[in-house]
Amino acid sequence: MGSQALPAEADVHMIISDVDGTLLDSDHRLHPRTFHALQWLRKNRPSLPIVIATGKQRTSVIEIREPLNLDVFRASHLNGCVVYNPGGVVASEVGLDKDTLIQLYRQFSAAGISTFFYDREKVYEVQGTDGPIWGDKLRGYGESVVSVDESFVQQIQDGSVTIIKAAICQKAGPELEQSRGWLTQQYAHNAFTMVQALPFCIELIPTTGSKGIALAKILDLHEPKIQAKNVLSFGDGQNDVSMFEIAGYAVAMANAMPAAVEASTHRTLSNDEGGVGVFLEQLYGFTYEEKPYDYWL
Image (cartoon, rainbow, N blue to C red; front, side):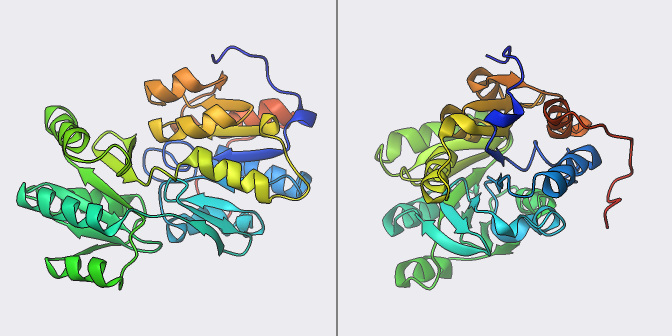
């Protein structure tokens, strides 16, 4: 756990990375050291797949995808529930069922707890008694958040929105843990899987979706074939564990949640120190001179 020697360059045939807390720093900016490393790989190893694996929608990672031309590779979004082929074409998608979504809406709306519903492009906010605080936080992560009311239930029922996942947001601690208890006790075990990437947010995804399941799909689709043992993964959240369990190399950030650290094979510096970039420099043997943020724009 975290103590293995660096993999050999020849043994890494794919890189897959989480975004928030991993590629992005605490201010939601792409760290220049990490960008430099990824840019070096795109220039010097152009056929090496670099796969984004995030809980966010595809529209929320344009600032990473476009300058590095990552559209030529597949991607995993909404915690692996949507897999995209090169060019942004959907390869596979799973979502929560309508009855579960409506039950979530009604229960947590009645309790005054902020709830969020995600389709491929938007985040639908049902504000709780905390007001807009949690929606504003999610906007800070680049998500397109819009408020909805009771009429949203009808949109779910008639299929005018297709919801992939949901999230419950509250202050970390006893309040959020009480909600976790409700979710465990009042819903069928196969209604959803609870994952967590942010301390104030419990995400609910289909049991048929995860970052690990998405990685397996991407490997199955890729030609020529790549084995899981030749995948290098980076992450910081509990929602990265399923991906870590499949990838041959799993690198936890210094800021990672305990579950991610426990599942890792390697560790690196924090997201605020450009930890992904540091690890890649060591692996591929190139150097970095300090640069300002957004130097590539």
